[in-house]
Structure formats: C-alpha cells, structure tokens
Amino acid sequence: MKLIITLLFGTYLSIQVNTQPEIQDNPIFPLQGKHVHSSSIIECPNGDLLACWFHGSGERTADDVVIQGARLKKGGNKWSPVFLMADTPDFPDCNPVLFIDQKERLRLFWIVVRANRWEQSILKYGMSTDYQRSEVPKWDWQDIILLKPGDTFAETIEAAFRELVTEEPMWAEYAPLYSTMITEAARDKAKRQTGWMTRTHPIVLPGGRILLPLYSDGYNVCLVAISDDDGENWRASKPIVGLGPIQPSIVRKKDGTLVAYMRDSGNAPYRVLTSTSTDDGESWSPAIDTKIPNPGSSLETITLQDGRWVMVFNDTEDGRHSLAAALSDDEGETWKWKRHVGRSDNREKSFAYPSLIQAEDGMLHLTYSYKEQGQATIRHCMFGADWIEQ
Figure 1 (cartoon, rainbow, N blue to C red):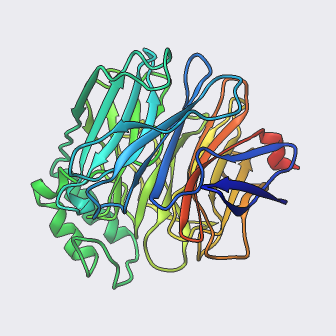
Figure 2 (cartoon, helix red, strand yellow):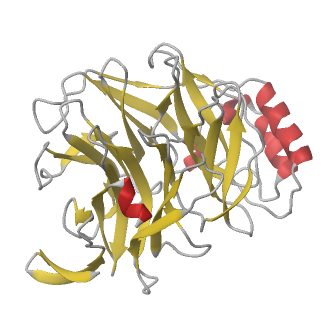
C-alpha cells in the first residue's frame, strides 16, 4: 500500500489505495462533494469500457439525481470526461445497470423514484445501437418495464415464511412488523407491480433467456425479470423470500442450478444470503444465511471463463471500510482465496457497491463507490484472478 496524492481544485487530498503491481486502482473522476453511488461497468464489443453511476445531492429524496457515465477507450489509461446518461427531470434516477444483449445492443436499466419512496420506483431502460463511435452512447429507444407478479406472489411469500423461522421485529417499508404484514401487502396488486429495483448485471442462460435481478425495499424480497425474446418482453419470476434478502447477484452452476447471492437487510447475524433455482429462474428456494459476512451492503458474483467464481463484497458485519475479492473453485461451496481491493482502519472511509465483469482478455474490471472526508468518487480497479490467489 502507498499514498497517492491527487490534485483536486488546487488542494491535495490523500487516498489510501492498493497499488500492488498486479492490480490497478484509480478514480474515474476526482473526489467531489456530490453523492455518487451504485456504479455499473461493461465491456463493449470493440474493447472500450463503459461505466455509469447515479449523481446528485442525495438518493431517493433528491430530485436532482441523474445517471452519469464515462468511457475508457481500449488500450487507454484515462477515462473520458463525465457525461449524462439519463435524466428524468424532477425525479431521482438511481441504480443504473449496463448490459449488452446477444444482438450487441447496449441496454441501460435503471429506476425512477416516484414520491421520493423506493417502493414507488418505476423500472426503465434505454437501448442503443450506436454506442461505440463516440464517447457518449446515442439512445435509440427508451421505455418502462412493467411486471405483473400474480396471485402466487403472496402464496409463495406466505409459504416461505412458514418454512423460515422469523424473528420479530423485522423491518420493511410496508411492514414495521414483519411476516404477517408482508404477506398482506403481497396481496395488493398495485404494491406488487411497483418498486422493483435494479442493482447487478443480468445473466444470459445457454438457451438465450435473460435474467434481470431485481429487489423491493417495500417487501424486502427479490425476484427476477425474465425475457425469452432478447429483452423485448419481460415477466416476473416467483419471489426470493427470506429475512431481508435484497440486491441479488446470480451465477449458474455447471448442472444448470442458479445461485443468487444477496445483501442482508435483516437482523443479526449479518451474512450474505443465498437462494437457488432449478428451473431457469422461474422459482427460488427461501433465502438462507451463508457463512460469508455482510454489513448490509451490495455485492456481485460472476462466473469466470474457466468456470471459477469470483465474489466482491464487504467482508465485515459492520461497516463498508473493507472490500474484498474472493475466489471459489467449487461453485461456491468454499471460497479458498481472498484479497482486499480496499481496506482502511478509518471507518469513515467507504469502499462499497461493486460492479464486476471479466473482459474478453480475461482481466477482471471492477467499479465501486469510494468515500472519504465527505467527498466521493467512483473507482475503477483491474486485476487478474491469479492476483486473488497470491
């Protein structure tokens, strides 16, 4: 570790970063006073990297929040100036997710927050076929995604709570007291058709099915938006129910089983939660604790080209001052190797909300939110899987 001095508006600010030769970790833009958070990164077919995040004076309660982005040209070492990706005037735009579909169209998924309440959010997407010639993507289409969880939504929630041992009081926007009120809210068609929010990358199954992971702060449950026609139409899976699972990240085992890893928004012990699906995402087992610590913070897990899994997560039960990358060679049964991307004894520093991909050349690219002394940026980190094993 060494101290890197960054010049910002004529003032030197010290940032503690990991600078081993095997890893590169740099800010996409200088530290600044606005709230920047929840990034997403993708590799374009031409090798460029695109990243985006939300930016404004707050989150759901700040109507000036927009989606911003930047581009790193293939072979380059400096990100472009920040540009606007999406803005719904006078509404907060949050939680952007980048995805390139099988027709090589760029898709941006994000939420627009109504009434300054997460559970009233609308799921939107933009699509671009002209995103590689210039720094800023040119959007061809923009629309909303409507999901209609049926009556089985409430039935699945009720059955899962019977299977799980609930400990009151739990919390969700619709339920200061938990399981009974969540089940009652699940019977409300209006409530269950709104508030589904993005956070992590979609995955594409071998048959072409797209699974877009979603979650609700109203219900404190997750589900998956399913498309079998390359994103033209979407429908809802059955919910992933547990004691506070949100922000799922999905990987696929060699036998076809899907595994979702989720942030823990429930009570102690604070652990990464997991759920499985054996029917290509249609239905999911109740979410249960793993042994992996989680302080109530987002994570992402991906499958590497060689079949191993990598998870990037905050490896604490309290605080976002430590961000780790872990490697599994047995499809999540164990995580034998772990190294820290960012870590500080100063708990006011924050390394959080990772977005992770593996590029065509095998390198891992990670973006994450970084905060210190009331200022924030999005950092880009590049490393190989062998770095984790060292």
